[in-house]
Length: 267
Length: 302
Image 1 (cartoon, rainbow over the protein chains, first blue to last red):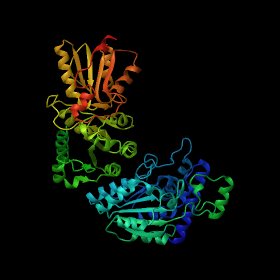
Image 2: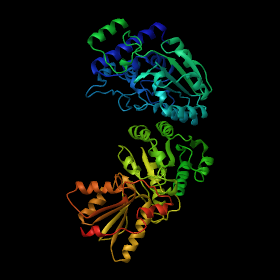
Image 3: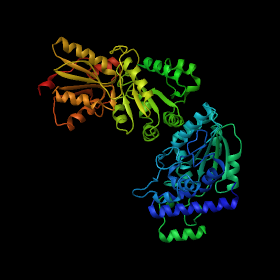
Image 4: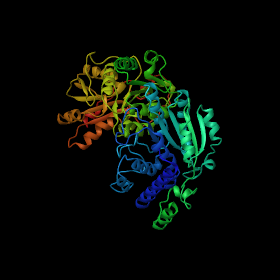
């Protein structure tokens, strides 16, 4: 079991990978990747029953990144976990690359499903959880949603079905960083009260600080008889002062100067 | 065709407990027996087609062979992006079964008609498109789609269609079936117009025209070799489909003719790029698009 210092150091390392990947590829979505780093690390290093050496074992736990535009963070975490070499991260988003901007399950081991458009991965995860329930397979399914993604109607279609089916093997997390693609989440479409909404749809709901490892781990460990929703309050662009809580970092990639400044901040 | 579908699926589900049937709340008087006999292989996912398709993809990626049953517009167009990405791009083992080909749902109106589905489904990579024309083709192609790994769209009519083929006929994906042989021209038909095509062929026979009736249930993969054979023999071609003339069977045949170095007289019979605003039964709708009388063969003279 990794201790807190190790987890925090790994989060810095993952953010450095992501910085480098976006610097070289001039890709967007760095802000959306930085808000989910701690959640992904907690999942892959403390929660998920997955084996990078044997990624398709039948009773493994499955993770779906439904907000697939945060892919850079997932690739960095998968590489650190040993699903593929760290050097593959250099092949992100570039001509002749290996790792696309959104997820393609044929690209590298560890990607459970090809996901790009919003509002798909959540429902796919429900199907996977249903398959495990019907077959008494002990594997659990985890799915990470964006807050803006919850504008999609399919999220609420799925929310009803998962509760109706009593999928106690399903855990969803909303990366509630409060900025979506063209504005502040609750100014575009007010989603509050978020916790009450999910409760009324029949989910067990936990609200946490999505950058606090202790709280994240605790929220994953609590038992549940209904599908579980973790509302994770996060900060878009977390970790880099000039990127935090800024819409523009949904799109921009760092220049050399910003890259160096960001590296200095991470220490 | 509905009965042939569910009877075939029931047989498959008995032998293989990974066969799974999902419906977004359709199937009254059709699916009850399956639901009651195989509760662990059945789900009514509610009136939420987009979620349903993605859930089917999740089940399929966990080892199930999933059939999704609904009315054509709802199982193809309402959830098109889910079909494109979660089924086709991911190449998941999901079979879409749509009922109500063309103008089947008559008086229910254009929302329930299906005249664009072949065009959109055949344009998606990885997707197999099957349009059976009678209960025998339905039985056979449901079996073939079960045997084939990957996404398949199966376009069905309704119930009570006549058997055109012999009961023991075997039908393959990618192959046409020549029902009558003829030399004056070929009538190629797909989906629910097979019986009508047979009727016209019989009428032409009485007028001393020798017509080859070809059933083309497999739209993708398409039986290119049959079209090339007709071109080589210089047999004119007439296509018949209860679908927009844009993008369906007629287009598929035209693409082959246009890229060959041969030429024959050619004509497409179908729906001429219009929505129906007529109120009336399937038969009435057919009358309004001139399907009640066989087309002129003037195109032969060109």
